[in-house]
Length: 379
Image (cartoon, rainbow, N blue to C red; front, top):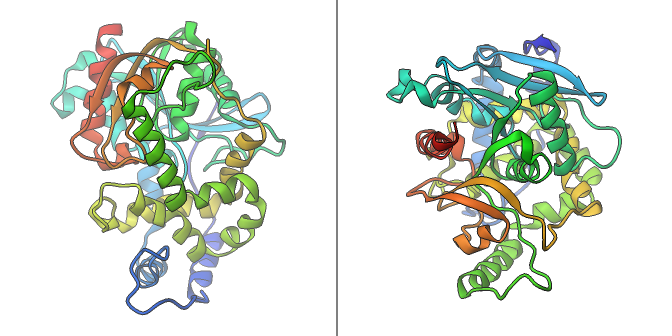
């Protein structure tokens, strides 16, 4: 395990600005909003800010304020934040991000979890927090072999927590793909887990013997089908032809920003104005991480790997350890509790008053309080 500090070569940042200057913008429909995709006027504004005002060095300094490391696990370099708790009865917690975010999505919640007393909480609720970058994301190594799916990432995380960091038992939390990794941790490494907390629910087994769907579950499936028709094109492309998409996104910073930022607007509780939830600096720090690490290709390839190597849940495959679920109203899906109880041993169920898919950035206080409350009985 080696200490890690971000230090992006200046030549790479200069090249980024040069590319932004030379962006060949597409045309657009006069007066069009976001219904055609990333809004042209906004993307011009964001790219101009990125080129002229965005200060990566300031963001880099802030990121380097967290203790970061790199370690080889099964021959793969894994980057992670490790922040130790201020309290004396800390519970180890690994938190996994999804796509199109990165480890920086969790920065707001780390101090709240490690030092609750400083923010009005109880010292007894403190956590040792581990936030890794998934393989192929950010500053973790890009897999060169097929088969990197959530079940394998869960195995890597179990080794990180037990063999590298020395924890005998720990908790896990995640949303989006991170919820899938967290679910797999609960399935594959139950003896090592105290409990799991998720903001997105894995699709349960619905085959023979699963039991009849409730009306609420039928409505959910219909809603998900409509969502897939309206919003799911990105997933279909990434799951079928990720390499083709990568040429454009890896070469054009404006294209990369449009592909990612459009999702932050569509999936957050922003009422159509993405900057009601995220500052330009937050949006661009996340996009810049993808740019300087050239990980857009390896990140979206995870979708292809899951389609090629599906691991659907079986009838008898259940997460038996305690599970906490926090649902944010503007997330991609808001299933009924019965849907979750088909797969999880649900001990806490919270329907939040506000927030969307990027809960740790949008509503850090709400998320942290729910994490604290869920794990409190299991310390």
